[in-house]
Length: 179
Image (cartoon, rainbow, N blue to C red; front, side, top):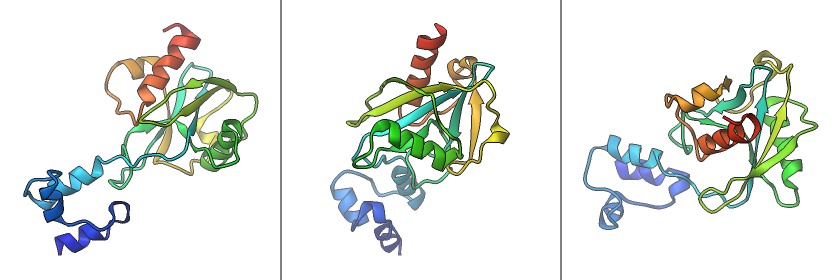
């Protein structure tokens, strides 16, 4: 029964516990340990990504609290809003589309911040300062919720970040706030 349940996980194809054991991926253990191992697997990206740092009037940046689902990489961690650049899209076009889809926010007058490669793919990051932005102005369509975090929050070590988000936000504060 356990093997058939594992086989039904689409992202991992046809597998068996004994094959995983032979490959050295797992040791005989309770199902919970197998599931925890699956939870921490990162599915490789096959296209470049784009993301946005949106700053409010208090100098805080908007981040997404990712879903708390074991099937996604970095569940229940903070990341930027944005996503995959589709074939034929520029990074800027993808960013405008992603932000509209995820936040229902009309993104204009943003600037390129830099490229932050991660695990073999590019993450093109952009920034926008919107002194009037408030959480209640946004319709969150992806993740558990949106949160504004300060430079102090980033450096105190109490937050969990997805992918290379902590590096990106630290670079942002260093470049634009000399912190």
